[in-house]
Image (tube, rainbow, N blue to C red; front, side):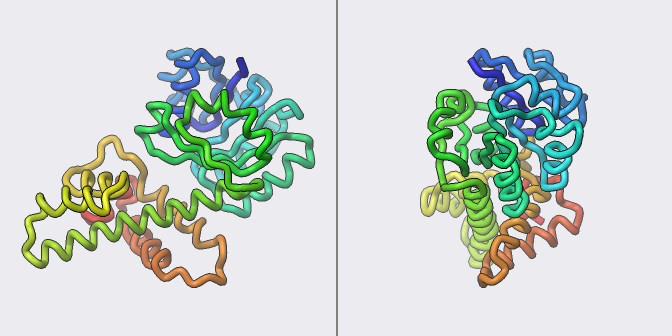
Length: 281
């Protein structure tokens, strides 16, 4: 059984660690704030002093940090992932990052003889905790097939989109669409309210048609605060900013409007609230 390393133990990283431990894997972890690793350590994870040490102790390493800056900090330098890697390691960027930084990793790792995948995650807190994440992969397809038995402990689906960087591109496209859906749900509810409709009937009807997980999430958050949150305003705003950087020559008016709306909510001090709370601010 392969050894697992997880760098970054927030909502998604913690879920990955917990499910690998349940499946009997040896798991080594690192997080910028060691205090946040205590529950995982008590569950059996080994706490490393640096990302380099995680990489040295594991066969498959997941990086699940917050953004480009935190990702760059854990990949680079004397104590970084790359410093602890060798040709037998599988290095996976599972944070949601900019395409430029992801492609840089996708070019750098093979030059040094390392196997690299960008494999961002989707499914939110519930899927992370239950081991039912969808993994959105870019990299070598044949090598990905060989990884699937080990990915089964944390995921229900693995989607392959092409060479390194492709998984990240898709994740940003996906989050742009989901954010637009949430914002559109709020607008639909405002219109329904203005027309005197009973919102307690409108919400469930919208969950039936158009329906879907995002509509259900938006309706749940519309009725009550999401505690614990599923995904924050800060995080979706960052992802939308990365999405807008992908192709500056393409007109994307809906994405521009949704990004502006989230930036406004973040600037008003709601960054730590659930992303669906945009419809209540």
